[in-house]
Image (cartoon, rainbow, N blue to C red; front, side, top):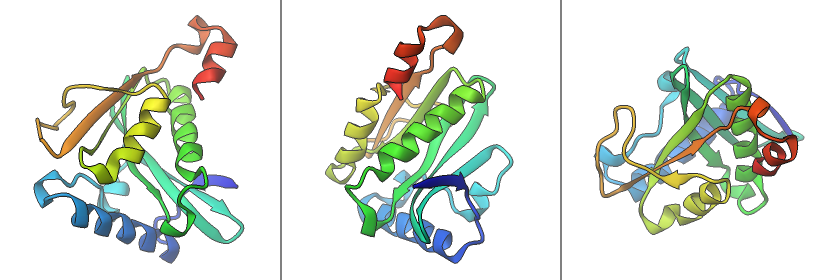
Length: 166
């Protein structure tokens, strides 16, 4: 598997993004849908990566800079044909490594509170994310779960402890 910066003009990426937005529309009311569209993903404070195996696009994920110390995970999506193969785990590991390299001290995310999103919430919790209050411009919403993870400074943590968080 290969992770690289996303080609936002790729037909495969656009199809994956449409799949992502369609799933959000089917599972959450419009006021509770926070997925970025292509214009949102093109903003200078957003960086998107894709995971590939050969010619197949397996999934994607993005980081959005909220401030110098805080980033948000956006657009985590596994292509339907590649569910339950470790795609999301691989992308999340990459996003956290990129966040650490960029010097962020905290990474947060918003995901749905409905049953459809339970696998995602379990994945995030397995990486140490904990539920938190709404952050940035989010507000209380019964359809949303907010989670956050403090990223320790690698210089202040034993290398084996940092590796165990990935």
